Length: 104
Image 1: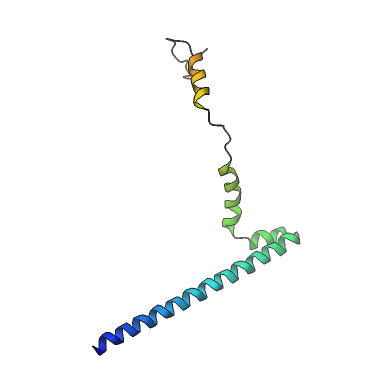
Image 2: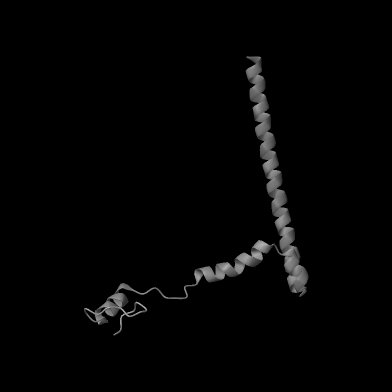
């Protein structure tokens, strides 16, 4: 019975130490991000572009433009009515040309 109690206490101590470590890690990570953000903002406002790009993580530089273009649809998706109008305008019993587009 004593051995089981010892194991339970050790388990609880480990869990508590792990919780404390996670809290500490989370706060240090937040502090580091805030410092990095302040440094980048300072470099941006002082027009030091070389130092700005060196201080900015490469993921941020490459992901920001990708997010802008990802959301933007360059070609508008045709509606069902538009597709039906195009199909109705096609001539019956005519094969597509060499580019596989039917001639009107």
